Amino acid sequence: MNPVAGSAPMKSNRRIAALVKKDLLLETRQQYTLYGILLYVASTIFVVYLSMGQPEEKTWNGLFWVIQLFVCVNAVAKSFIQENRGRMLYFYTISSARDFVLAKLLFNAMLMVLMSLLSLLVFSLLLGNPFENAFQFLLVTCLGGFSLSLVFTFLAAIAAKAQQSSALMAIMGFPVIVPQLLLLMKISTAAFSSVIQAGYWQLVLLLVGFDLLVVALAVILFPFLWKD
Image (cartoon, rainbow, N blue to C red; front, side, top):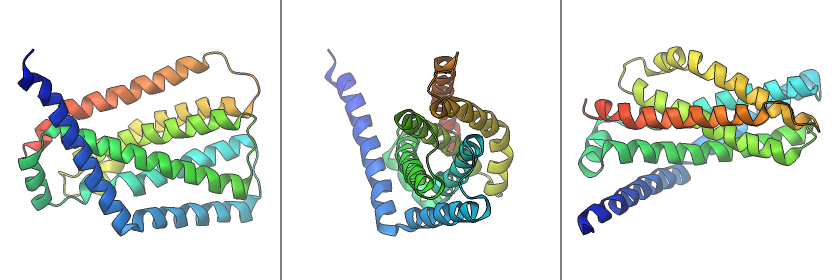
C-alpha cells in the first residue's frame, strides 16, 4: 500500500476540518448572524401571531417553510459573498477547490440545521404545534434545513463571482428552490396526520437524491470558479 496515497484523504479531511473550524470561530466571535436571525424569526412569527392567532395545519406548515427560506438566505447565502479577494487568494494557496467548497457546505449545513431547530422552537411557543408526530417533523426540519443550505451555498459560490450577486442569487435560486420548498411541504404534511401517506419514502429519497446532486455539482463546477 502506498503511504502517500493513503495520507492524501487524511490531509484533505484535516483541511476541511480546519476550514470549518475557521468559519465556526468567526461566527462565534461576530454572533450578529445568530442574533439577527433570531430577532427576524421572533418578530416575524409574533406579527403572524397578532394578525391570525394560531393558524390551521396547512397555513402553519406553509409559513414555517417560507420563513425557513428567508432564514437560509440571511444565514447561508453570505458565506461566499463575505469572502473578499484577498482571503480567496490566501485560501487558494493553502487549500484545494474541493476541500474549500465541501467545508463551506458542511459548515452552512450545520448552521442552517441549528437555525431551523431554533425557528421550530419559536414557532411552537408562539403559534402552537399542530402536528401529530413531533419527532417526525423534527427530522424533516433537520433534513429541510440541510437541503436548503446546500442549494444556497452552491448558488452563493456562483453569485460571488458576479457584480450583482444578490440579484443573481434571486434569479438563479427561484426555479431551483420553489420545487424543493413544495417537496418539503409535501413531506412535512405527513407529520400532521397519524397515517403515513402513500409514496412518503419516495419523496424523502427524492429530496436526498436532490441533495447529493447539488453536492456533486458543487464539487465538479466550483474548481472552474476557483481558478478565476
